[in-house]
Length: 136
Image 1 (cartoon, rainbow, N blue to C red):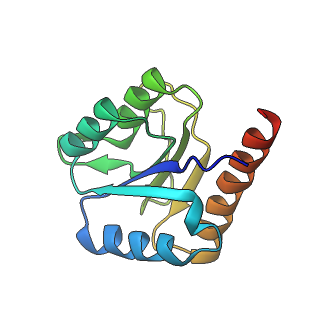
Image 2: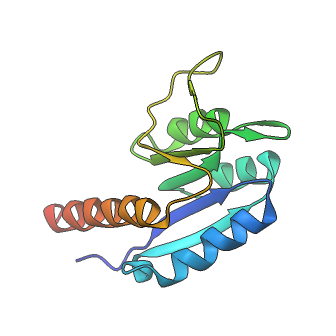
Image 3: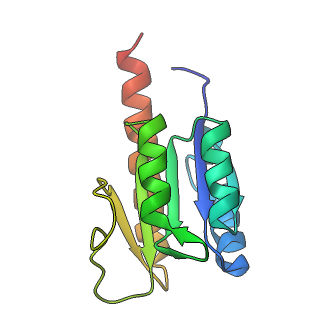
C-alpha cells in the first residue's frame, strides 16, 4: 500500500466546530492515513485548494464570503475525484439550489452524530486503500 496521505480540508466559520472535527480526526481508526488542514474562512480555504492537492473537502454549506458549494466546484476543477462532504444545520438542504452543480458524496447534519462522521471517514480511507492497492 502507498504511504501517500489523503489531504483533507475542513472548513467552517465556527472555530469550535473546526477544532472539534480536527481533534476527532486525530483519533479515528484511520487517522494515520490523513493529512489535514483546517480553515475558518472561504477565502483561506480557496487559497488552500489553489495551492495544494486536496483529496477530501468537508465544508459548511454557508460561509461568509462564499459557499461550501463554490469551494466544492473550485476543488472539482483541480481534482475531479475529490470527495466532498457538505455540513449544515438546516433541516432541508437543497445543495444545488442557485449554486453550481457539483456531486456531493456525503452530507453531515449539525449537530454531528460522530458515528456517522466516523463512517464517512472510514469509507474514504477504505476507498483510498482499494485505489492504492489496485494501482500497484
